[in-house]
Length: 150
Image 1 (cartoon, rainbow, N blue to C red):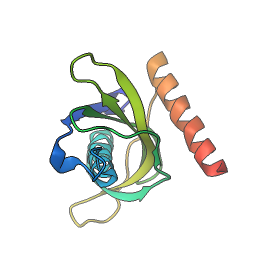
Image 2: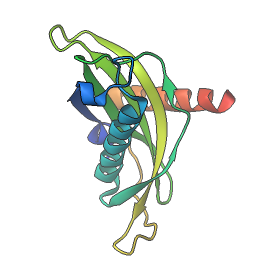
Image 3: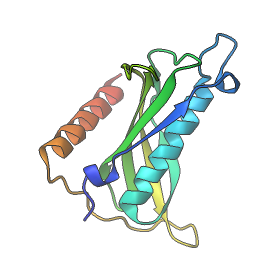
Image 4: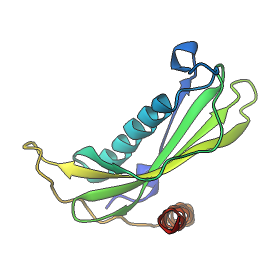
């Protein structure tokens, strides 16, 4: 059975001028695209099936990512249903020279596992077998509850 840590993925993109808006910072659509793609990969790693985006919950853009910085996105599965997979998504800006990191964007997404006919298919049970996995899962569940309360 897949664990939370088995699904944790991180990817980086160098923010270039073609990713930017008129203010010289990453266009929000690019950040959403990167988050959604990595979230789907995390969900697929968990499900062992193709997954499609069903919902992206409240997206909070807290700070911009300037051109020249690195956009870092982290994704991991923190809950699962019969065919659905909940993924925590967090984006950071990172200074490519120092590695200094600052959280910029966060969200939760739901993906649905589909078979070759694109019909929903079942997913395994999520297991948590480490302290780090428990910490990540609890943080995601706590954030998800806070999003619902808003």
